[in-house]
Length: 98
Image 1 (cartoon, rainbow, N blue to C red):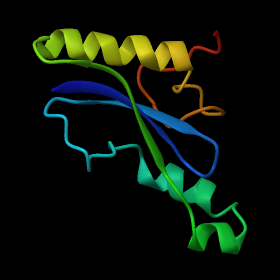
Image 2: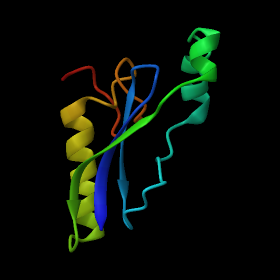
Image 3: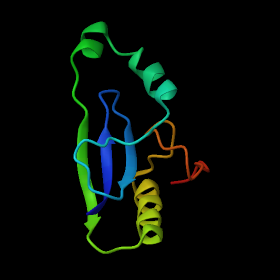
Image 4: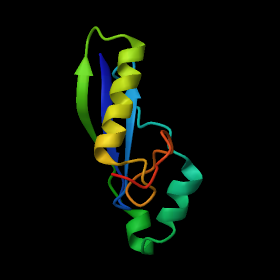
């Protein structure tokens, strides 16, 4: 099952990703340096006990890889997760417009 998912971090920021096999344990690959920098701003107790949420936004059993990639970009733009103030996606590059 191919999926588009949204990860919500305790920092309040999101990451939109794609999964070609539907793995329940895959949480994407945002830039961990950026995520860690945001985590450093959380209170110590929140850094020691937190929840990361994964939501499946879209799925298909038979879409092509190119369709999956196009759907990922569509959801990144829809959720503005490429805006550094909102999310951890760095592609497509945020142009300052919503």
